[in-house]
Amino acid sequence: AAHAFWETQPVTQFSAERSAPELPEGAIQPPQKVEDVRQEPYKLPSAYEWCTCDVNDAQEIVEVYTLLTNNYVEDDDNMFRFDYSKEFLRWALKLPGYTSQWHIGVRAKTSKKLVAFISGVPARIRVQSAVVRMAEINFLCVHKKLRSKRLAPVLIREITRRVHLRDTWQAVYTAGVVLPKPLATCRYWHRSLNPKKLIDVGFSRLARNMTMARTIKLYKLPEQPLSPGIRPMHPADVPAVTALVTTYLQQFAIAPVLSEEEIAHLLLPAAGVVSSYVIGGEGGRVSDLCSFYTLPSSIIGNPEHSTLKAAYSFYNVATSVPLEQLMTDALILAKQDDFDVFNALDIQHNEAFLKDLKFGPGDGFLHYYLYNWRLNKELQPRQVGLVML
Ligand SMILES: COc1cccc(CC(=N)NC(=O)c2cccnc2OC2CCNCC2)c1
Image 1 (cartoon, rainbow, N blue to C red):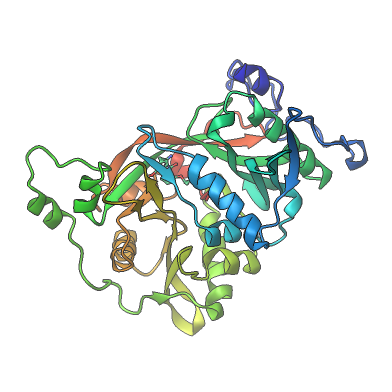
Image 2: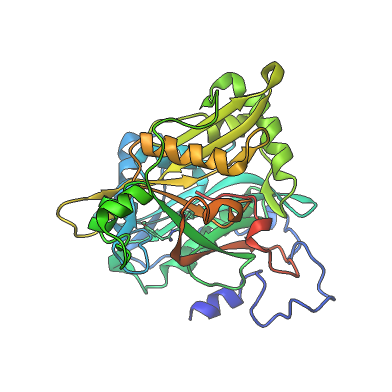
């Protein structure tokens, strides 16, 4: 039944031969006229109703937080579940140009309980040489008690309809599952910062030939960053950081096109949400940037520890120091901020430092997908410049 849904969507099908040159790259379906887009919401099972979640409303953001923290993505062994904070969700959903029409909830008609959610935010994404206005789709979540009611396809059709109503015909999304048809398949890697806790909670295992003392020593980091002058990014850095990131992202086959406003929103430090550090160059220029976002995970059923504090590599540009040194500073700064682990995908230039900085491979993959855009060749992870939250 799952394939039946994706076989009806404008995505590259598994059956399609990528090598077939006759299919042109680009939009799979031409855009419709906005006035021809279906006006009425898709039909839900009779006990449920659509709602729009107002992320500025203190109560509604709590409802979205509660749904996700109890029902969103878990690791393959169901030991950890993402625990996006309320502040993080507000930040991720209120990107410049956002609309609450793309923050879609499903409520039980009687109890009014939020039982499902899906979101989109506007983004300009360059795919090779084409800059395409897209929706970044994220946080698709159906309450555990309502799984296999085929709600997810209805949520996907509904957000597609609402994205079409705003004259937007492409989307980008990631998933840990294989769907038709990955644009890129990335591996995730973890760098221990607090190895004792990671082993206590079962995230990591003590190597057979290592003691705990030896393991703690192995992952020990300097107290202070190595790069002279590295400091938190602040508002006056936004123009220079925008220039640095824009130049850096040119080299990737898929990357966001970010305005100063978007750079400010995405990268200016926000406690418990995003951390960014810069090294200043001459005349107010910025020569280097490292950044990571805060995404804790609930530790399912562990009495001693309830939360794994994880940092996720975001955008990192090294032009005046070696990338390994910059990322070592990111690890040092994350450790100073009491993170337990630093996570990264093998995208951007990350392969160059993962092994040397003692990252270990994770047990799963993160697949990138485009909606209504065909590329004849799957991308290598190093060709991906876009980081999804
Ligand atoms: C450690 O707690 C976890 C809780 C839930 C799932 C996973 C494994 C996993 N699926 N990890 C990732 O997807 C991942 C690993 C490294 C970097 N970014 C990632 O995903 C990001 C980007 C996609 N949206 C989720 C966060 C781990």
